[in-house]
Length: 267
Image (tube, rainbow, N blue to C red; front, side, top):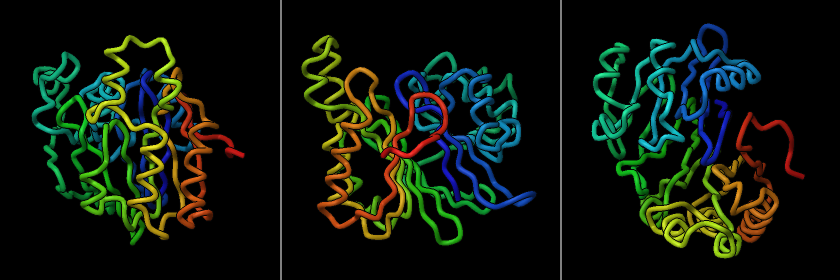
């Protein structure tokens, strides 16, 4: 099973999850908040065709995740998994558009599991200011991967053991608190970002690993980094300290760029 982030951040998000080979390959698109032409080009770089998807998943209604989600599902003639309360939450997610594009919309719920091909997918509701918002767990042939961005705190899902026993994790590491505090965002926006319904700081992401991960973890991708309130090396150094402190030096640590798939190692 492979996860490819095609875009990650406030300017747009899109990722692919795939498993298997040849005619047995299953491919899932997670979010589509970037231009279709851009997404198609990035997908081709990692050997995929956005017209050949087995399912499309939506995390939440914010435009940087949802703008082209219906268009992607329609082009691929793939079922679209999204929560019923997200329908009509924005113009791009209107019921009329789902009907017009003949979308097979399928509902998701917290801790609900469904299969896309041979991949078991579990939706996990997370705290964010676009209720409901979901992260996902993917399981294939005994391997488990998690994808969690856009969440303001992790106490509940750590207590539920969501991050334990993962082989791979894509995790938000949105902002550096000092950069956010000293930056040019209006105070109200600073408070929104750092609230329990906002985004995870580098330190909060590090706490996820310290408190919730296990020695099973092999790969960790930091995602949804703010381009104004964070820097890849700052986020990476914070997380590497956490990995070292809890004996997870073996973990392959990567940063998802704002645009394009990961193309080079951190260090």
